Image (cartoon, rainbow, N blue to C red; front, side, top):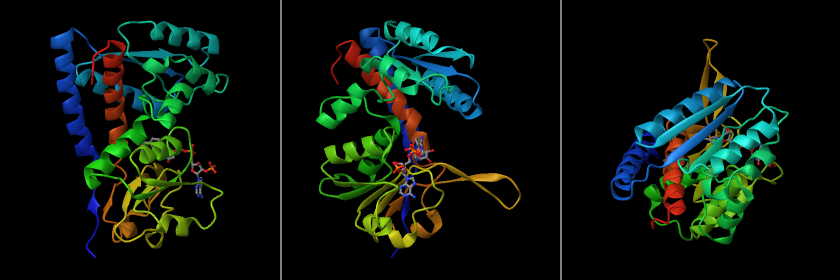
Amino acid sequence: MTEAAIIDGKAFAARLRQTIAADVAGLKAEHGLTPGLAVVLVGEDPASQVYVRSKGEQTLEAGMHSETHRLPAETSQAELLALVERLNSDPAVHGVLVQFPVPDHISQAAVVAAISPDKDVDGLTVANAGRLASGLPALTPCTPTGCMMLLRDQLGTLSGKRAVVIGRSNLMGKPMAQLLLAADCTVTIAHSRTHDLPAVVREADIVVAAVGRAQMVKADWVKPGAVVIDVGINRIPKDDGKTRLVGDVAFDEVKAVASAITPVPGGVGPMTIACLLANTVLAAKRLNGIGE
Ligand code: NAP
């Protein structure tokens, strides 16, 4: 068997951002509409600062309106919810994203509930999760949406494929499973209580690993020819005392079995912000009654 094709999420995301920029230019020219994304960061978590900066930069590069609200860690929940409320009613803003994690004294669920479902570009509100599960138009979470684009690009139709999603978080596993189901896959969701996980994964034509455990999925878990999407981001120590990023899949061994696989880094990761921009454009169109 030949080695797996390496799915280049970085290149795919760059092409997607170009398409989005062209779409934005058209919206400006034809409708005088500039899609806008507001990102809110509470506190100084270093990883969150990097994500928020990238989101702002890529939003501007796509020709969109970008605003970043940096609030001190001691901001009260009431103050944060008041800002979200203001952004919900700001006509220049079509997407509202609060970067998680928020400090412990703020309820993440309360923040999500405060975001207008029409501007919920992270797809986390109960309204959007329910719409996705009901087969209604929704704003869907960015990372699973990006995984679906990579899968469609690789496989064409997904209809009838057996898919196993490892992980059942609201952010990743559950919406991923719903999107695969909507694409007519036969879907299994596995999690920490699943019995004989390797045997479950071996059934799959499509494996999506969203666990957060370094290199957990081994070659003998994977059916020859399966497509493997690795969502995990884990840091492991290197010999020189530094760290390196790895996914939830043992990439070097699984690539000898799979037909295609996403690397970490450079696979799923770059798709997330590109899909955030796509969701913001979609939200802007829907809020302004512009057909897709
Ligand atoms: P999470 O909320 O911690 O969920 C992890 C899931 O994995 C849970 O459903 C858990 O099962 C399951 N799990 C844990 N240990 C397991 C085991 N030994 N066997 C089978 N299932 C197990 O994590 P998440 O937010 O979904 O993220 C998952 C990974 O994706 C993380 O590495 C995260 O950094 C990464 N991620 C990347 C991106 C991106 O690329 N942009 C975006 C989002 C997430 P239980 O429910 O039973 O506990």
